[in-house]
Amino acid sequence: MFTYYYREEEEFIFPITIHPDVSGRPHVLLMLERFIEWVNEHENVHWVPMIEMARDFRARKKPAMGAKMPQGLSPVI
Image 1 (spheres, rainbow, N blue to C red):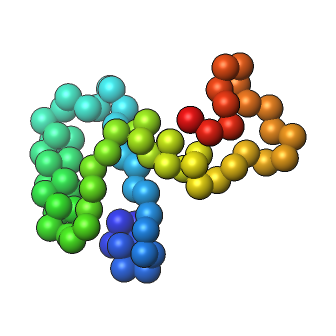
Image 2 (image 1 turned 180 degrees about the vertical axis):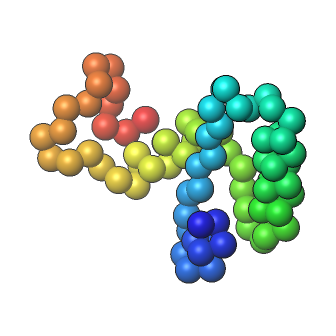
């Protein structure tokens, strides 16, 4: 999927999450390490925390008209 988006899109967000049940397993860590090294070989790749991805998304995409936001959460962070 990363290859497709990198080739076809000018900008994209590629979130990565790992379930805690597998995150500490050696084979998973090695696969993740290889993936990160491979992604870093591409130009203009930036690693950011999930909160930055969320803020960027929310700044670009406004909630649907009439959407109910969670209490205390404004339409834009």
